[in-house]
Image 1 (cartoon, rainbow, N blue to C red):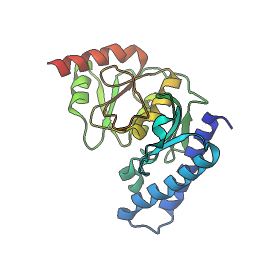
Image 2: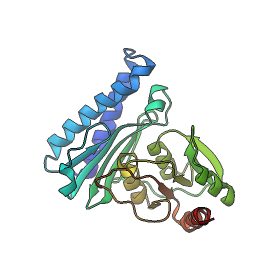
Image 3: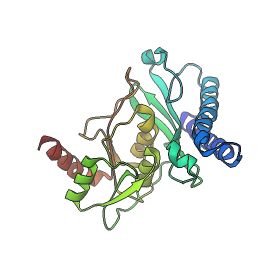
Image 4: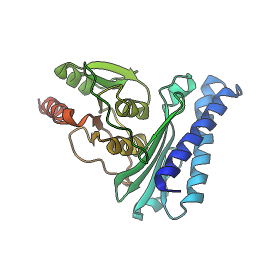
Length: 245
């Protein structure tokens, strides 16, 4: 099984596990997110250590011992991206299984179990046509001021959505054109989505245009831009002007 096939299989399987946990009716709404995180994380960690024992691993739900830092290949996973949305039975949550190779987001799969869809680098979708009116994705609960300002400058419609993976995949699927995030993220929030978006032909970078680098000692990776390639310079120009003003 190739790395891309493994990533897609694990993300999809973890998604099914999460749906079963939620549909069991055992957990209260308050406990559901934690139960889902722990169950999916246990599956993903054990499966990756079995399938790729020589690779490093970074998970949101596992304390890092530093062993991954000297490794070229590091799997970066988020068992439930969008815990609130998962607990609320919304569709905008995701499972991320990414592989960083020498710091690059090389392989990835993002499962959207609420939609029954898994997108991966092994089978990249063709780049969808642009929307007639530009659509920019922002957090449904706390949209970043910078993204709102850039949207206004570009005449883009704001679209609120849950998890980072769901927003990134909405651009991949052609439901939106721009995902600009400046409100703080970690490597597990965007490694797999960045890999899938790059494979589709989208622009992927930090909010200021710098490359995304993974497997850092500090996994905080605060900002992200995923957009149609022809829009990248406009978005970056507006963002830089905003930061410098």
